[in-house]
Length: 160
Image 1 (cartoon, rainbow, N blue to C red):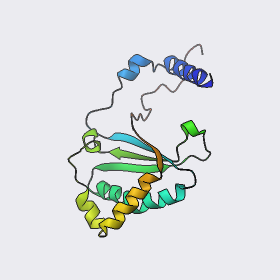
Image 2: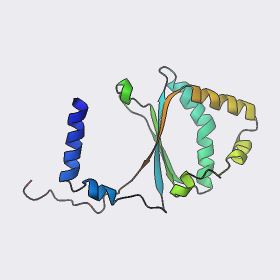
Image 3: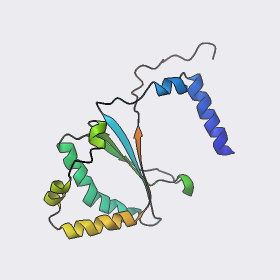
Image 4: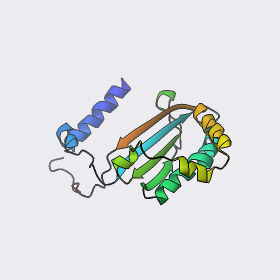
């Protein structure tokens, strides 16, 4: 019931604020230019530190190299200060701003040469990456539309 009330309140706020379904549909992300994806990770209880160490050691340097190549424009991480209920819990969010949607979803990009350069001991890298994925309970990739709010009205609505 609480979820229904929250969803109704959010929908009402969107409609009153001029962001109804019609205007949201008109705000499709551009096909070129920056494209943002939020990557959410839910990690087995008691293993967050181990997972983070593996992420920092094995995955993050690959992303840094992709940023040096210009495929990634920006990236940052976040973790919740407090924990949520199990159904909505996430432990780590990594946001990547890709140069374009095409870069974000380019299945022809081969990260093998980057991995070979950064991790000469490929067996250790693969074993540690396998362990990192064993520690995951859930993983979501959420493309998001980002608005800098520059076109929003700054005054309260009349009569409100």
